[in-house]
Length: 169
Image (cartoon, rainbow, N blue to C red; front, side, top):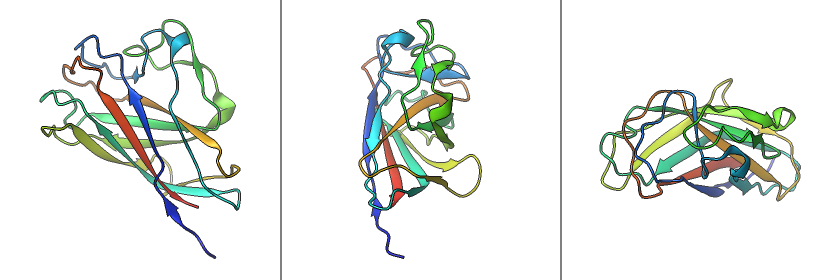
């Protein structure tokens, strides 16, 4: 068995026009209007048609000292981008309108204390030790982000969330 580890990265820039804290169950997205949300993605590089994703790394550029420390986040992976109703964008209840068949797995992330350049988390699968996916090489894997616990007031400068997947191809 010959495998290689890749670290595809993807970013999500939030709306950033408010400092309102995220309530538990709210989505972190790039648009307040659900029908205008663009779901970020990364491509897997596998020639065998499958990949194992044992963990994810999540960072935010939000430097607000009380925003993210110890907040629990959830990252969901999808083979097709889910869609959202008009009232379910950034800072609203996470409620996909479509996409159930494309759900690949979910990861829990406990955010670090705030640093002067943001916060980070290592995210582990909710079930088992890893998620195994079977997709063609170059296939996009989409991701959504949910605050599972309430955050503090956030920055208003369009913080960037960066997701780095640890993919065993």
